[in-house]
Length: 423
Image (cartoon, rainbow, N blue to C red; front, top):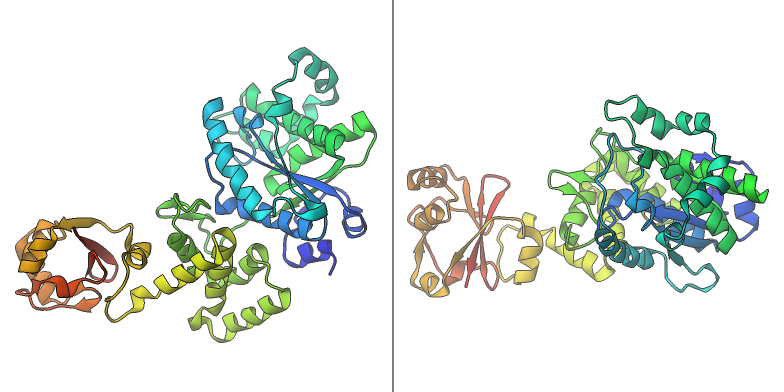
């Protein structure tokens, strides 16, 4: 299958500036680019669709340029934003760029043959611009009526927030990025999310006016969930690619919980599984939805790609801990992978060796507001020790109750977990 058809069948194609792009991509090697704003020191799963689109194009032999916006990041893109972003310092942007560069290199096979990734920072050329020359040479090619008509500008003008002159000029800078990359690397295609359409077409117009050359744009759809929830968000916040910000276990769990109505679409977007295999998984969603085979495959494939296969295998095993009848003989690493967000209370090992009354521990650790409340909950069968229900409020905890080298797990009700750390 040719790359354009592959992207089309996987649902990547939202808008193209010229129908000839299909023929160009299928018959020529094209240098293309996508931009990434350094608004944080890590990318998040909302960036994955653009990254995967770049991966497909690169695998087909096209040459990717990843532009990290050290220059445009100082301005802030108004696209898709209801209000202006707080301006960041150069130091903060540079710190953010370091994390983003490493993640992009991880995905785009840095140093790969003819399709080797080019990584650039647009501050390198935007930072050298002279205002008068820029307005004279670039600004004169932009018509105010066209700029005001762009969707990102119109939405902000109609809002109470409005739009600053700083943000209004963002599209000039991104258009200039495309022109610079066209001159420097013969880049003829810009790809991005659907909210980037206006910025992309501005760059194409600038190249046509100044270089009398044809450039192209391709946008990918906005990823949504069937339930109406915001994609890439949980109760804990954004799902990041950095394991320090979102643990591999939490990352894996996000995808495991994918709605049946979304899972096939996400398999097409976010994995490199053949379409024939995805179709087989789609049938299982219809015939055996309770097994959640498609969700498990989705979570494993994406975790493998973002982190590593070894990490995916570890979190896959760890995710089964919640279904164990009893937690025992585990490593601290396995246990913490699942319960690292649970509140913990520390107990000295010598104290546990002598024995600690369960009621005393529940009160000391403030798992219950009072001893009487803890006693009542135990009687009702609402307290679990290492996943096993305990109804004996006179129970004495000892070393025999360790689930791992240094932890005991106490559960209250169905989902409220607490860790007892033994030091």
